[in-house]
Length: 74
Image (cartoon, rainbow, N blue to C red; front, side, top):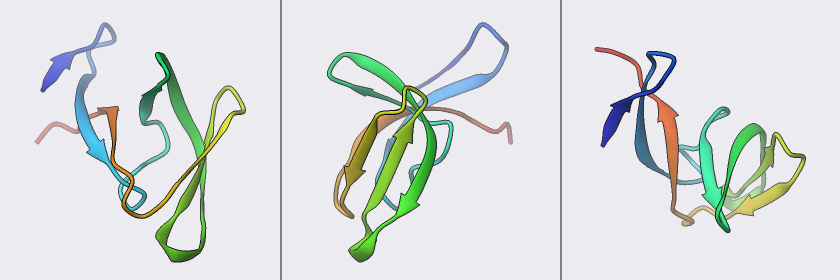
């Protein structure tokens, strides 16, 4: 699903894993939307996500989350 955001950017929901998560992705956890500020590679395909709030989340290689991401126009 995609939609026009107020700033005229095309955004959409995407499923992300440790392999596909990107800086700038907005992930909703416990009812709060958090933007990924930075990420670090960990052993065995895991990643540690750092959110703009300073909170950390570690996901392993098979974790699947829904994120909102700005999409590129084709």
